[in-house]
Image (cartoon, rainbow, N blue to C red; front, side, top):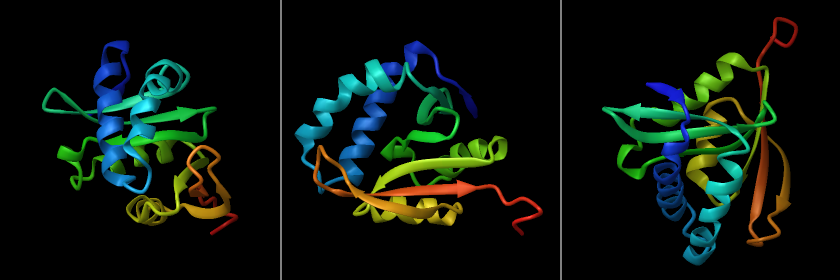
Length: 148
């Protein structure tokens, strides 16, 4: 079930973010991710609209939206991955919006494929200044009758 984020979720969501980041971004050093935990807790979570996927009373994943169309985070606890939770979180955003944007590391093939399957397309490429890694800017737009 999807529900709104509560401040008491912060520690668990930061842990989900960290574990999922370490798992899917092995090409970036572990120290980088651990060093970002405070920023996630103190800047990203409070500065975004966040929804949590709750599975049997446990937080299993979350999605954070900034400025109504930028997905700042979509992470699923590694123990709950491959169960459709990420798709359900993303679909809930797509149902209520006409446009969504995000950035993803080019070397994160799993995430790039996931977003492509959900209708996102690559609009630009750039280098992340903190990691030196190539990142893709991706965008999704709801098809209107005119665009079909």
